[in-house]
Image (cartoon, helix red, strand yellow):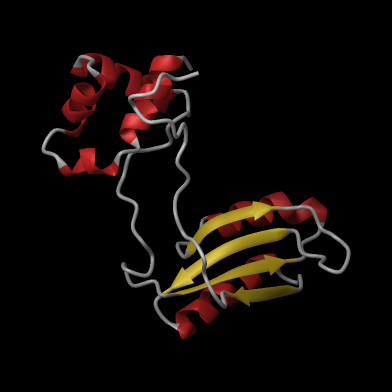
Length: 163
């Protein structure tokens, strides 16, 4: 990645450009580039995996998924990768990852699960528990949420030069 790629990423993170009829034209206008350069660089960043996708990001609560939990599972190390991969395919799982265990908390697979109802949430966690079976698990319900947002990368303003 070079300085111009970083400038492009900054521009593409400005959600308001996607509310225009031609968002890549708007990005080009903001950057003072040609549309062709914006599209070519975006394609390359996508092909190399820097950008996973460009899509709408819904707020789960506003989209109906008002219940959420962090489900944690104590899966044997030799089964953890396969189990986590299977869990990540569940439609109610938004994040799934392996973490190190630590004393007093033996869980190594973490899955963020959302649903529209308490019953739906419990059902989804039980479905994940079946994948992890016979492993112990816990559902850690959110008590109070302080922040929910997507990360913003390269946060300098478009007017400031990239370092």
